[in-house]
Amino acid sequence: DVQPDVPLKEAWKFIFGSKLSKLYTVTLVTDGNGSILTIELEFENEDSELQKLIEIKPEAFQNRQNVRKKCNNIITRNFFENNFTPEHVSFNEFSAKCDLPPAVPSSPLKVKNISILGETLFMAGRYNKFSRTLCQTPWIIDGKRIAESSLQEIIQEPVIKLFKCDKNLVRFIASGREDVDVRCLGSGRPFVIELPDTQHTKVTFLEFRALEKEINKSPDLHVQDLQLVKREDLTHIKKGEETKTKNYRALCVYTGENTLTNDMISVLNKPEFVIEQKTPIRVLHRRSLITRSKIIHSMKASLVKNHPKLFCLDVVTQAGTYIKELVHGDFGRTIPNVKDLLLDFLKEKNNEILYNINVDIIALDVTAVNLDW
Image: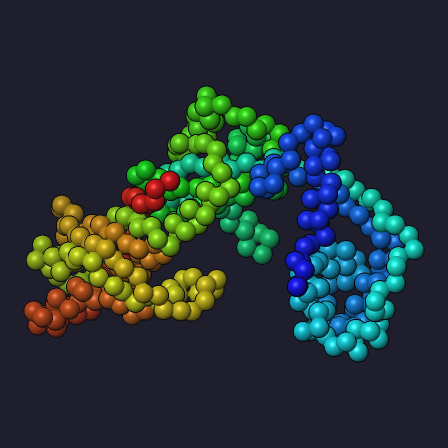
């Protein structure tokens, strides 16, 4: 029978974990939510052993700079299995540089470092964004900061202070994101902050309410329902990115020789339909070029009083729909779109002189993120 393949670190934890627990009278936690004790061991002949691997398969290291300096970090179990197992290198190539079976080491492993990482906590809540100039996360391009601040930083600063954790380890996770010029209203967008190495772990109800009050001093945002959740709850927020629906309200401007009428915009009042949406031009620099089928669950338009060129559009969509492109069409890359629906109406009325029209968004709001969170 094939014996189970047990990683060395798991065997070590199995043998020594319970002993350390008894020695220090602490509870051994196996679900990954407790404090983490890391013991770093070193082997005195490590550099010469690693050099043999480099000589066997130098192409495995060719994209890594300063190989000699970084070897301690790059030779992982996964790296070895992907490059030096029989499926990837022949017996003759390997045995030409390395002894098979390997020689018994003449010296023991030495303890290089012992470190303790505090408990990892997960704080969840919902946020509203009221500013049209505030990005969700830090906006940095080629090392240069584009925006002075971000929603993430405004929220995280008092959170880090309360939980006493390392700001460099903190991770902000939201159920989707809105563009910098889009507000997020209604009940808000769900988010989680991962807080590794926390020193203050017993946060009370009153402390959470005080934390909300401190964050909400910013006029640009609002948070609510802050609370601790379990690690496994993160799968719910990540799955929700694809399965949830979102409500939008857009203030749109119509450019054409005629003025808008109720009869004309009635063509935008539609029940559920499907659009084909190519990756928008504005995000092609960071997203792959594909065509996505997205469900528009409902769409309804209404005229803006005393503004003959403006109308309001309420849309309920599948997550991941690009609303701006749904409106103006993105040069025909989103089909159907609001501009084409209005154009089809004019063609049916044989108003050829009016065919040269454009539709765009002046302001856009997320009015609901429909995720049970």
